[in-house]
Amino acid sequence: MNKPIIALDFSSKEQVEEFLALFGEPLFVKVGMELFYQEGPELVRMIKSKGHQIFLDLKLHDIPNTVESAMRGLAKLGVDLTNVHAAGGVEMMKAAKKGLAGSTTQLIAVTQLTSTDETQMHEDQLIYVSLEESVLHYAKQAKRAGLDGVVCSVLESSAIARDCGEAFLKVTPGIRIAGAAADDQKRVATPKAAKEQGSTHIVVGRAITKAQDPVAAYSQIKNEWSGR
Ligand SMILES: O=c1ccn([C@@H]2O[C@H](COP(=O)(O)O)[C@@H](O)[C@H]2O)c(=O)[nH]1
Image (cartoon, rainbow, N blue to C red; front, side, top):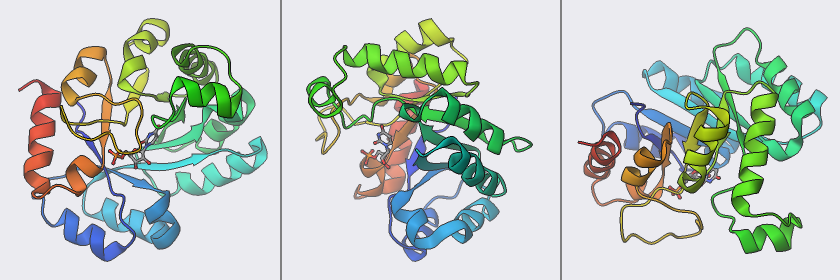
């Protein structure tokens, strides 16, 4: 069972160090745009040197040549997982994979953000299919491009497992403890539901980082996710 991925949505290295010091065990953490744009590759190296696994969530989306070159740079960081937007297309996803050649970094694609619901997808993106159909389409495109999996919500995990296989990664943010506020997320689910629906990873930010006791919150989520 993969550890829950903790989204380190902080703005400074000091905040990250303070947070990580609370835990006496190796973690799987996510470094996203907020942190990376302020602290850069050095922060990633620091987290790695402490023995944690890293999902570098930069969601690249550009022309294939640019994405390939950017991935060539990211490959040197030795992170465990990174990503692109599937909306960039199969050619772009193949270029991203080419840029990572020779590294052990796994590559996944964002399908529809978990902050998007079907109405928004219709109105903002002019994509007139169901949200599940859109997510499944992007998942199949990612598989065709040779990627290791996708970012999706728990609500689509079982359909992706059916169409793309159980081993294809289903990395699912939008995780909330039962009854907690969804905040800006639209497609949310509990860690227990994620396990039942076949997610391979869960990504949890505020439910842990903003908790009164982040270690206790992490432990509760980890237990629910692992079925204990
Ligand atoms: O579709 C997506 C893709 C990425 N995320 C990221 O996951 C975390 C979720 O944070 P919470 O506080 O648990 O809501 C955050 O870093 C997002 O950038 C996502 O939510 N949805």
